[in-house]
Image (cartoon, rainbow, N blue to C red; front, side, top):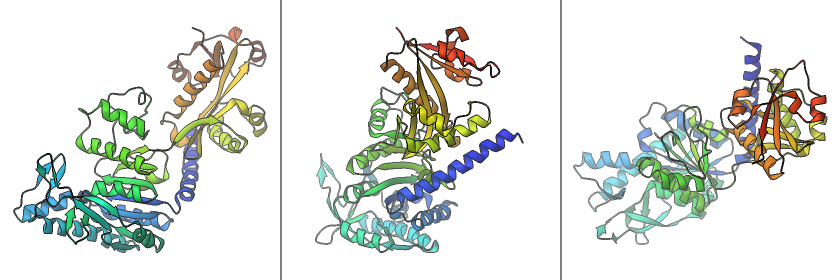
Length: 450
């Protein structure tokens, strides 16, 4: 094995462990709402998913589960020779079908509760949803299909405080005891309006939104796909733009997720995740990693590039060390970074530092881009690109005539930002005087003047 390969793996594992501890502390005491599609319940990895939910709960995260019930209801009605009709994606529930709808919904909830019990959790099934009839809309009679009128927040909060995991089947009741079939997606989303929800998960067989083939616009043109082609994270405005530009490309499930993610964020959820439950560990990866295995829509600021401060220096040194060991960067010390700290920026994800870079000012209207480094787990995430673009824009705003950089092994990467080959003679005098001839770094230039 190449020693450098071992070093990279070591940094990657250590970085992941730090990240997990950081997220465990961050999410302790928060409420996660999980909508779990019932077609997962027959999957061989469903017990593993439920065990992972148990691990989340045991780490101090509060959990509410909403079972998706469409497939269970379809199977139940088919067994009794009853036809399912839909209008705009909403089931039209007739009087004869309602008892079977209830039975299927309660059965899905019971199935989840039995797995929670096997994982050592105290699941509790109940109905804390007040509903009303959808009535007749534009000539369509929705019969016993209803809308949520109110969620009994106080009861749910008490159960959560007593360490229960509430399981809420999508059946609501009106004030005189009439039952209504309600949308499990609507239920999961509405919980974000009544409860303080840290994360809402839609867990099914969709593994996220793939970027390939989608039309992008002003807000989405810099979205970066993961190794498997998924959009890892986007804000509400980006989600709205993708919806508007790709109504003919996205499938119904993707459109439904994006619409409900936007609604849930506006209702109060911080993060809304779409991920597949058919891959082992996908839930834990999504919770304890900034990249994750699915697609996330976020309401508040998820990642940002900001000026570095003194508290960031250990993280900057940590991120740079792997590059220094491989000869990509020259060594830095705490003192050398501290002296020029105002030049540094960091890439922050959920209050964790995963990238850094600097823009050092020189004479003759020139500045140097330096110290670009990204954490081992995030080198294909677009973070490095974002930092370089940011520093170029800072250079423009400060009125520099030209940017330059020295590199030994990243020529092709910097070329795609518009940098071109330069010479030692083109460097500003103070940089030229300290050029390391034994290192033989290549010199790249980027004119900023029009």
